[in-house]
Length: 132
Length: 231
Image 1 (spheres, chains in turn purple, red):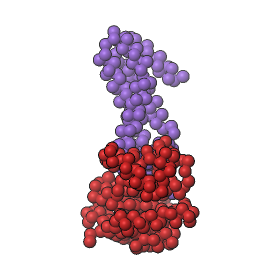
Image 2 (cartoon, chains in turn yellow, blue):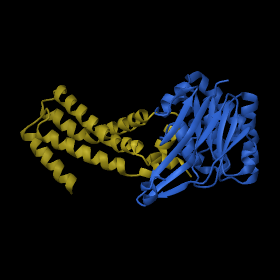
Image 3 (cartoon, rainbow over the protein chains, first blue to last red):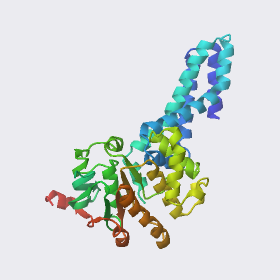
Image 4 (cartoon, chains in turn purple, red):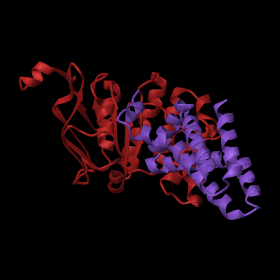
């Protein structure tokens, strides 16, 4: 319900104040950030196992962070494609504003998807998971 | 000969509301030279895994010193320490990624270690063969027994051709037949391949395989009053 409301507000703002990080885009970014953070918090046990494995294999926490960032970036981009397309259409099929929006949307998605993972890996209790 | 790694009088404190749990009250000192096989022997909860984490740089010691090739690395991270001594670790809990096959897990470890793509296949085969896992290359870790998963972790660690192999309880949750498979392989790695090995164990029989043993003592618990009294 909340998502529908936000998307509706976003769409109506998007039609009246189009493009280039107008209020509609900010709402979209907020939604993406919240949804990405929520998605990242789901299935924590599996993600924790992945983080433990990658660090044990010799990866750095930044490599793991980057892995999740790319995953979040891709998810946010795919999820926003309809909205990005409407923006593209509303701006008279001009590529630049849509590209800027896509950049911000995907970056925010990637960052908020990866942030909980980095926080987990930096926490004091993380290495306790290696113990039996 | 300069030791590959050395811990000198290391202590680790865990503060709690009621007081302080102190591991290695008198300080623990461990020395591992090149080609050495050292075992840390101690009971459950005596800080064996913590010592492994302190050596690797995953946990900080409250007191004492850790050195790699004579260089003080007490405040350095796991990655910085690995630049000095090529280290691979096998933890008590199996770490193989469940969504990848056994050989894919090993390949991933090699790619993270920066091994060139053309060399990875051969290294994976070699390492799996050493631990008798050739037939399981295409299997998924979750479908395997505890002993097999333990050997996968060892094969993954060996594939990167480490100078130092750190293993937390290599036979911890294994029956005697699985233990009997792993221990001679570890001794072989040390004797024939000159890989330095540091293991922790609660089993004297397992520790007896090593060239030398470091015995831990039970931790001490200091109440807040004792701490204030200066104990």
